[in-house]
Image 1: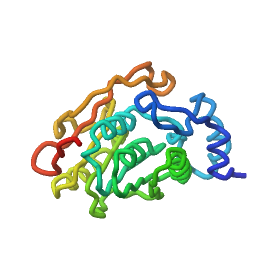
Image 2 (image 1 turned 30 degrees about the horizontal axis):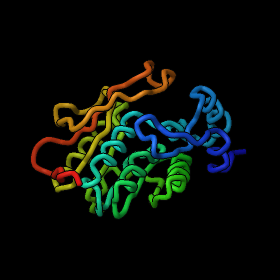
Image 3 (image 1 turned 90 degrees about the horizontal axis):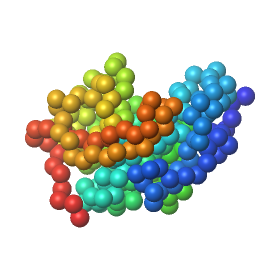
Length: 224
């Protein structure tokens, strides 16, 4: 029998901060292998994705830190955090003063984790289970952390994000050097040495960068 998402999250995580965002709190997993096995055993029959929501990935951490250090980028604006994971970038945007923050995920457990983490940090984030690639709801800012790790979907995502950029949306990408990042279309804005789990990343620290698309499009506001 499949556990209730919120019960599963609370049972298999503990509340803690991520290295780049010590002022925020999240339901995160202590043991990488353990929660992966627990998820496979409890949820595998339902065909749900692995528990990516149980970790604060380096790209999402970089985005959250960048936004909280530069709140003028999102203050008073409509923000989407695409493939939000644990919701760290969405919550960072909300803390930085965004007027409306949406978060999308394709995993129902991730959506519940985002809602729980937003509640922990006393911010409003509208989380939904949806693949939004190709959609445009008039967002002012779109955030994408750690989304270029798989080849089949990377170009589809890149084309969508670049189209949003061209129509004037500010698209910010958080990435620690994933293989399918479209580097030739991007310029770096910031870099962070980010402690990570060796079980997940095969190293203890990753260099995570915040990127934007080059060429005419979404403007970088002067930080407040």
